[in-house]
Length: 211
Image 1 (cartoon, rainbow, N blue to C red):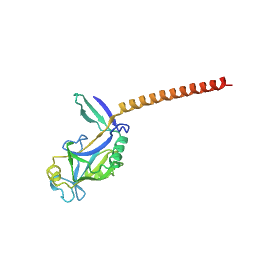
Image 2: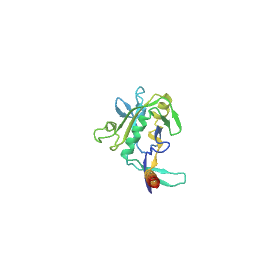
Image 3: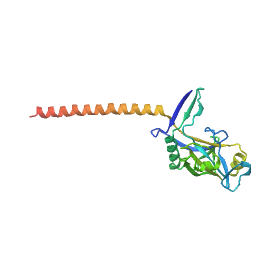
Image 4: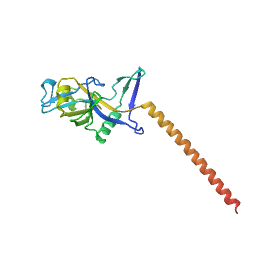
């Protein structure tokens, strides 16, 4: 089955991550945990005053199953560099409050309160909560101040993790586009040089004829 690396194409009209969604089946197959007194617990016992869920938003080099509208099945993955870039763009674009439910409904009252990359697999904060994620993983903590979402979706266990929403491109297509762009730029440059030489020759000839 085909495996594609997805990248952020900054030359595209839209790119990067727009929102983080609470979903029942996270594409990265890793659940989040709810926090009470900084311990991993079941949702039914969650301290209602805390209302923070923590988990991975994006895991590098992890194959994610996809199926397009034509029925073609394939896998996609993100490199460590792309995960870092996606995290930085999400924050720099001011998307900390952009949250959705199952990629369908915009949510109010949810906000990103922590964001970091796992740099040490043994001593990272994620290990304190029993999350076994590799180096380069983008971790997030979300504060849920929406009463209905907390009780009906998070505390009940209807949603179990995070899934990102954004615009990425196939690395092969991006590189091909860059190669084509470089080729046409080289052609234009050659034309400019040739045209400039022709113009210079004509000027010299005109100057010589006038003597």
